[in-house]
Image 1 (tube, rainbow, N blue to C red):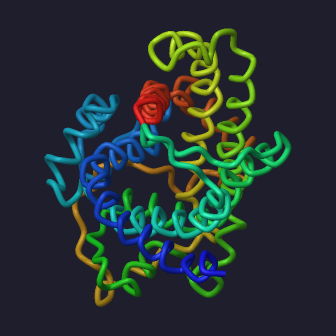
Image 2: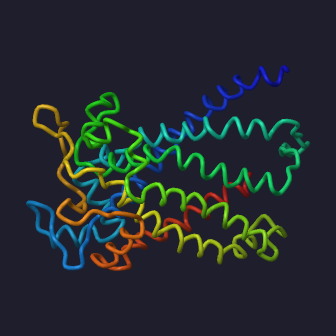
Length: 323
């Protein structure tokens, strides 16, 4: 009974102890994440067109690479531009912790602490672990679809949005139909399917890891070497889904432009990224988005910044092995 009464205190402690590290992590990674979203969202038709009022050739030469995009964002918008989207990203992370923490605490009931300091959780059946693995990947991904849309639009909009003026920000980021019914964000074509498929890749590949010879013989370099084929497969699956998901989150449910009237619109930076406009046929699904991207921009667009995916996997795996 005492353990049950302590759960709310444990939850408060976990969330409190997570806020500072989360802010620190985003303080380091947000510029790279923001540039990645812009780079993958950049519309680069095969024949190429420039942004209004700019020499298209100069823009293309500057934003055709990840680091070229980073250079342009810093030159035009400065450090504030590189940190656009940090507030919704922090909110989404804390929300994920709130969802996962009760499950983690439930699993930790009856845990043992070894003299070495390692924590041993009670043994669970393989079926239970499989369900938990998929559930803990899927549930946060589904719940956070609206926040993912808001985050990507915050990063790519030229407007200077304040975290302390959410109403003005949402007028810029959401269409009137989306503001009237925020749950309609789940109906943005292709976004939900993209997020669900991305969430399924990790638990699916973790199952494959069970069959890699020698994967548990060592917790050092041989593990990574044995897992390289799995990492390559994850890169091939995740990168196109991430690129297409980014494009789809920026597409509004209706064709109306956001409410940016002169008396209500926040100030804006110079454009740093060219997005696909309403003059083109809208994407109707994840598959349609893939087809149109390949037809208009070439298949290489699907693998923009592909190296970020294996790098992220290796870093997260290395951190997990070091614990």
